[in-house]
Image (cartoon, rainbow, N blue to C red):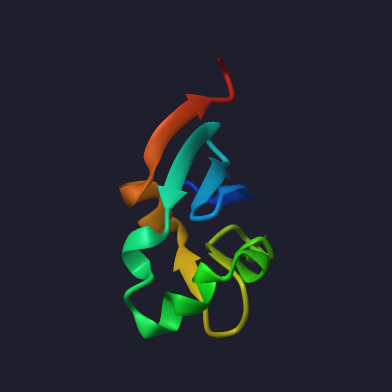
Length: 86
């Protein structure tokens, strides 16, 4: 399975990202389930969470050198939001 690359990532609310992929699909991804992992706990801070960026090439979103989420995770576990073709 070829996983589409991330085009954009936008913060929707305190724990949710809206991810647009290069195939036009848009998915919502809630980070809540990751917050119990120490590595992801800084994402609880709203100011920090809002600083999400897309890695060059679209392979992940990241906040710093230690915290990132892969395109595969976002694609597989995100929920369909809408299509940019709608």
